[in-house]
Image 1 (cartoon, rainbow, N blue to C red):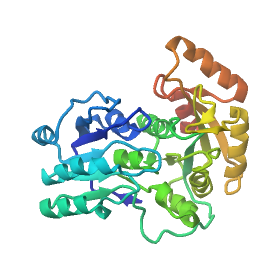
Image 2 (image 1 turned 60 degrees about the vertical axis):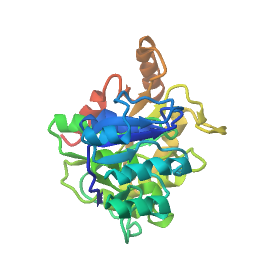
Image 3 (image 1 turned 90 degrees about the horizontal axis):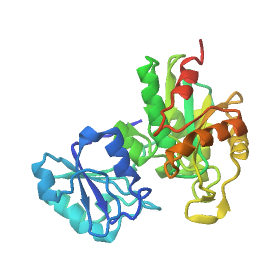
Image 4 (image 1 turned 45 degrees about the vertical axis):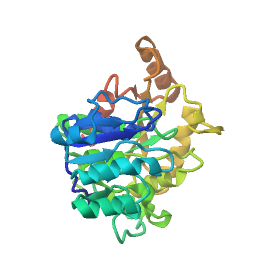
Length: 339
């Protein structure tokens, strides 16, 4: 698993982010690593606010920032050309620049030259380890849980982090296994699965979840969705490579189509469960769902209990909203797995 040498505190760069989904990296850092974040840098047309103080690069430097972290994750992972002046200014001020984009920072001459002048670092999170193997398909010791989704951006990372935290609070040995740029920034290491060549996806997932003690849980951050026309491949690689004992289905209430793909309907939750189990049981015949995680953020709190109860009635599984109510029912199931 890649270990990243990152230098907090961070100035979170939001640029011209139009919505919270585009700024999920910054929002994830603020929630899970608030002690590492000193401020946000936004353009005038930015529509996202993390709640951190607005700062320019000089102010952030005086506040103790050591890195500018790109907190935006637009579809396709491309770095916008109009960001380069700001990023070069940060490098000239002595800040490292940390990116989760697919575009390598050093491939941009303005940034490469600024980094050379200042001796600041260009850090690309989406750089998988060298010489990843193809999958062996061999069973490994230990226990594994994978969060899976009806779509992208439905709470897979948040649910995994919440479960990891809940297990550690109960004294259960567990590790969070990050598979995307935001998770890696939060955890300080992982494998960016969407940057791995397709033939090596399942092998990378095996490397991410090695042999462990029999009572140890690897809580793996899911990626993509089996129902996404562009990103299903990374989901399948994680399903096969992790050989997950337990699965949690994540869903955003009210979302009926794949985000930005209106021609692709999200199947009913019952059908989603069936499709995921069929795929997971290729490499782990005993794989099973332990619950459903709902993102009810756009619904009134008064409606939350009924939404959770409806999903439980339909699926026969405990249903949680990890942000609003936590994940205790699922954590108890995992803690009691081998008792």
